[in-house]
Image (tube, rainbow, N blue to C red):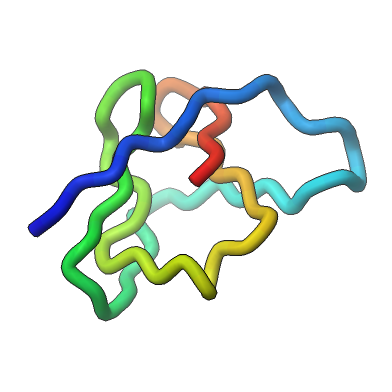
Length: 68
């Protein structure tokens, strides 16, 4: 299992990027997991780069915005 940390970024301006706020980690089919760059909360289990283009994930735990 490999872990990738999200890069903390400011809140994107409205309409510039899609912001996802999952209540539970997204599930994919790879061996790469993405964790919050601030608090290490699991954001994605099974990260696939093609599925998350131009997306910011807001951590449900600390509310920081993560760029992947």
